[in-house]
Length: 338
Image 1 (cartoon, rainbow, N blue to C red):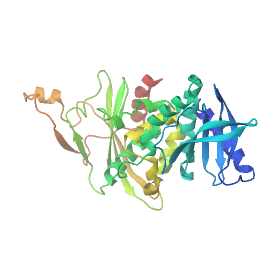
Image 2: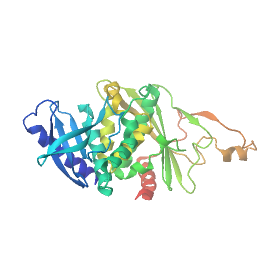
Image 3: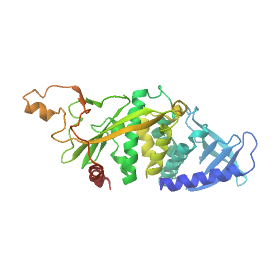
Image 4: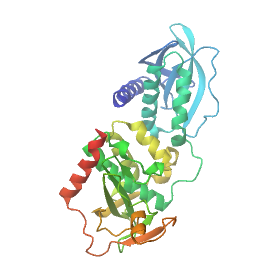
């Protein structure tokens, strides 16, 4: 449903773009198929080509202040409709390069409004609260190490989504979960390196390489090389996973939780990586690791906490999974998401 509404919105905005330009301070409007107690929601386009979503409200209703750029602006606007003035909550995207993400936000608002048409401005504020972290820029952009780590998780997420468009539910990394991807049947931990030599993996805590109860655990190791002229663009990778997923808003919410902000896209515009090496390991009893079970077996107190350690995977052992084993692991994991 989300993708269908995104397509409807894009179609309406493109139709408005084909019309003659409106006067300054005027917004061209096209009604949308979502009705509220105050009338239909509408798509809008201003003279500068900025896209608007217009939510009809009562004359005495208040539109929350505080959302005034650099990406989104929310104001109260009166427009003539059927020879009378209608008040709207006017949400506009001020960055044309973020039109795709704005369309997903607007589709989320439409879906929520359909379920509560009696008070659309309340719905609008609630949805914006969920999306606020993605569009605001309260802190610095992702650092080099964070960016490479998120890129690695997105590479794996893309692969999972190619198998199941609902696989976004398995992506747990942004929430600080034990494993980066997890279902009841299996899990994956993703490690990314930008070093040209060796295969060192830093493990954080005794729980990180503990498999889920009655499930299997895999470790994905990626070597990335910065590649200004080739490779995969960070922003293009985000677009690819959005296109593959059946829940774009959930992906964007998890990206925000991981520290990505759409307002920082200029900073990421030239970030590209080539994947020079990708290895998948089965974290079984033969895999080098430390867990609480290992400490107990070695008669070491389980009161030991905050254990970080490094695994060297440069040698021939442990051997990475074969392609068919990777496929089996993914299918086992994703059976639980269907």
